[in-house]
Length: 302
Image 1 (cartoon, rainbow, N blue to C red):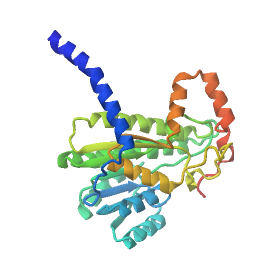
Image 2 (cartoon, rainbow, N blue to C red):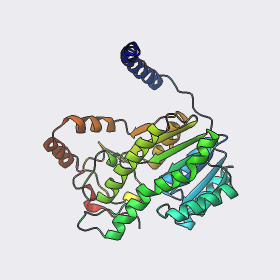
Image 3 (spheres, helix red, strand yellow):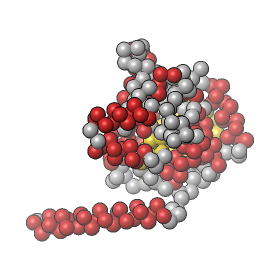
Image 4 (cartoon, helix red, strand yellow):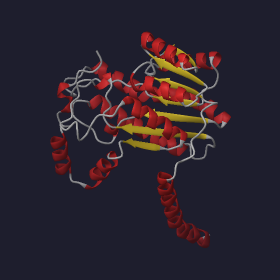
């Protein structure tokens, strides 16, 4: 027993070096991308914003079927027609992912009408955009129900069949605010931090599940209607991401089976700084960058 334990102890650092070198090589060499031609993709919040761009990107890369969930039929219908014009089969269902019973009901309807889902993209999200004391209680609950609990319900609805088929992928469009919160969006930051923990636990839990994987995307501020009015102090230095860029990199991460993706790459520096700097220094960074007051001009979706 002791020799087995010592062997594992000596092998561990070798494994770590091998995995780091392998990751470095993969960053340099063009990776082999997963073929999406047999995949059925369901995107929550798929009618507009990043969700619409995700639908376009999956269709462009050859996904067999795309299913859109959302709460606004007009947006869902427009996006569905656009995807069909691209030559990809597309369906939409009106569904509030914050409503557990509705999620399970619509998931059953999807299986009956469209078939099995092999890629689930949890993209739906809302932001209240106010401080805690200025926030309405119902609005705070809505953020948690849609941004966090909604992922519990959708994943529970579709993951069991993926495990049976040994073919599936759970994707979460999260936010860098899950790792570095800002004032004025306490509902959003809290829900995204919970969502990140959910995906981190899920990703580890799928290690022994062949053919089923997970991807978490944490983008910087993206120029969509949802965060309309948000202002960064140095927009030329920290420009907002384009939703089409987030969509493209997300689909690529799925094709490369990448577990976590920070956008842009400079966000890695933020994570490192948060790990080593004292709180007073982090507060000065927030003030200098303008993130401390960036939600003062927030308007949101109109």
